[in-house]
Image (cartoon, rainbow, N blue to C red; front, side):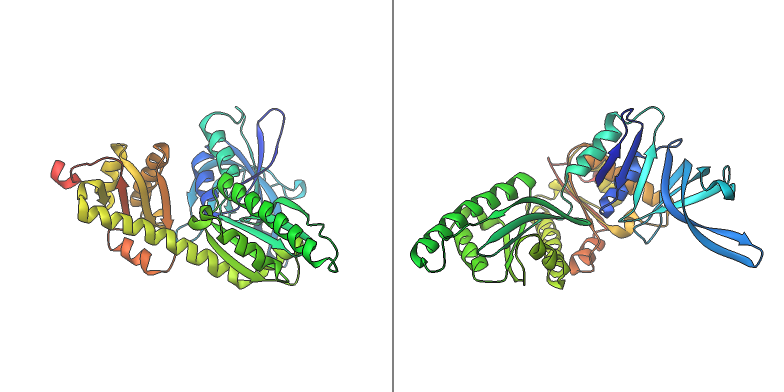
Length: 360
């Protein structure tokens, strides 16, 4: 989530939604009585019939809800702001907030406390744990992939000797690449990144890759090479346009899901008191503040059964409050089916608990 703007009174907050997790956070922080402004469309009657017109509306919130089976957040209430010529104030409207939406929220009492803290934490979090380095023998750029764009964290020039001075040029290149590799490691560790993509038009990207392989601290990261026509910022954007990035991210998401499920099955075999699965068991563990890692299939988060959805939402809130790692399984891989067979929700626990059905 990106904080676009905040007024001096701390009452008006403008935000850009970058991922599905941002929608979940907004669902939890938008309160009844807040005024939310967003671009929307509304059916208008005309002499010749009716037509849908795009506009910006402000509504005083009555309720919010996830729209089942989609990534949309619905915000419903009374219109308090709209085009003057349409005279819409006092009428009801539902805003549909999706990934990529920019919204403004006004809270009369001001933005502070736990709600604002959650938004600030979301704005600092990197939703896609990827660093792209686009490099050639002249320049380089390092950028973190965000939900809707990039954040350039470093760029510069190599300033190598002439190609005629081959020996000194190669020595300078090695020295530069060593410094760049150390900088990359620092960025990966500082921002909690897991994937590194080294891109460029020539051999320098391979030299940098070789330099990185020498450092054992990079062993915990996945490193990919990508050929591009450009280096620098243009090279980063070129990587973003390629389908390979999507496949890399899918692979990474699958690795995370498989790792959590494998850890879960390890405890099932070793000591089942360290796991919980199924809505009743996991709810009991959440109330006992015992959850270390929580896994939920997206079907439950967006379930049409309101009672079930509310229970799942409460479990996620409790898990987040106790600092648990929460993973929503939204992929179509086998991992989601494995979790679905466990009731769609499972947890690895901080300390052993007796089974819910045994303790009741």
